[in-house]
Amino acid sequence: MSHPHPELGAPPALPKDALRVIPLGGLGEVGRNMMVLEHRGKLLVIDCGVLFPEEHQPGVDVILPDFSYLKDRMNDIVGIVLTHGHEDHIGGVPYLLKQRNNIPLIGSRLTLALITAKLKEHRIKPTTIEVVEGDHRDLGPFGCEFIAVNHSIPDGLAVAVRTTAGLLLHTGDFKMDQFPLDKRLTDLPAFARLGAEGVDLFCTDSTNAEVPGFTTAEKDLAPAIETVFRTAPGRVVVSSFASHVHRIQQVLDSAHRHKRKVAFVGRSMVRNMDIARQLGYLDVPRGLIVDAKELSKMPDNKVTLVCTGSQGEPMAALSRMASGDHQIRIAENDTVLLASSLIPGNETSISRVINGLTRRGANVVHKGNAKVHVSGHASAGELVYCYNLVKPRNVMPVHGEWRHLRANADLAIATGLDPAHVPVVDDGVVVDLQDGEVRVTGKVRAGYVYVSAGTVGGVTEESLRDRVTLSQEGIVTVLALIDIDTGKLVEPPEFLARGLGADDSLFEDAIPSIEKALAAAAADGVGDPIDLEKRIGRAVSQWAGRKHRRNPLVIPVVVEA
Image (tube, rainbow, N blue to C red; front, top):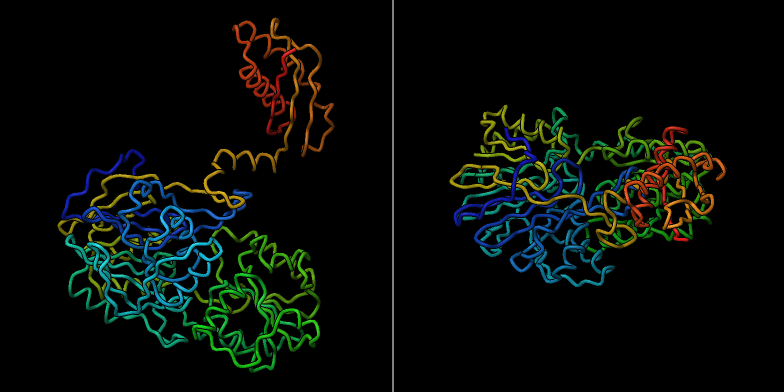
């Protein structure tokens, strides 16, 4: 089984009869899903999502895949196939279309409606091709067939891609719910039919590969949701992903049964639910939905609020309610229902939100204390079922952290696949399919691209490190007036410290260290102000570490006397 080799170089030219698979995101992380297929000089993109930042990435809005591999080949892209409408699969599309705005977007009705609404905010009018399960579309040398799969958002599609190099089947995000709320089953007969035709490369969703058995049906949440609505003495506040139409449908049904009105809170929630309602994916009884402003006039036990923020995102409605910084004030007798999964890495922020809500008197119902969430992803039992049904020649686990990819690979191997036919790779590692065999042939750039304050790529790993240092260690500016002829201080330097919890005078003890560094510079014949600044910065940093066990960001400024 191949490991991602850091020494891999750029891939060689692609033989005419081969298919190249380049994951640019989603392998080694949960989010930022993007795969590029290359065949006969053309490129097909499958999904283009974003990843949400963690606490060590302050000031970052979202994280994009690195498009640099595509930069000079924008005109070779024949289309972007979108498997479903979640942010981690469509959120990066506006940024890719800014480089070429007429790349066709191929997807189901709801998926295209969600991305079109998002693109409107970026002032981009996309070229779209709407497909339904069973449709075939030729996109350049790629023959695409679309297959129904169920997931936690309606209208999910797997895509089979036929090329002269072989047949690739990509599941997108999927599970095998046998009792889906919209009656739309994952099309296992289509998987079997493609298996009989011969699937050369099966790319499967790994998110739940570590979880044994089968994923619980969405409808099995009904009793827990019903209990909340039946027993809640005051308002019910439900937090969910803004795209989780099935979950919100169950909330609406329960609210209606218990004669409560519902208001959507938060821009993305209002927008998405409006789209889902208009397209008929959300069945809303007449008079159930009211404007959030009207709720204050109603008795608490007749009110339901549906908002975003189940991941503890600082700007989302629920986090702001928990910190008391939202017009909706959480109070005694409120019941808050967190109806979403926990994305790995968000545990601390979710815990903070639960504590904040509880402190304000709310009863918080979450997956830790009630059955209010089921996953949208296939568990180990379903994945094994698919391997036995499809009997692929090669399997490439996609979508997930390393442990998920490895667990998924182990499942494929357990069904009889040779480990050499199950490449486990990182973002950017290039896998070629030729004559039914897969080979790792190189690596392309696939780092994180940060969007901060609306600008793309301005923030680097280095500036993020500076931000973290600033937040944890503080900052000190050193203003030094230096006689360039002698290289000595003309007067004692001025220090301006912030975030160190100490007086600026504390740094006067660092002056001997600065004088020593300047004397060494003079002895080395160094008189350039920029070099002197570096030496002063280093001297103050080392002094602060030695003396105070602090590592502030030091900004030295040299003024020539």
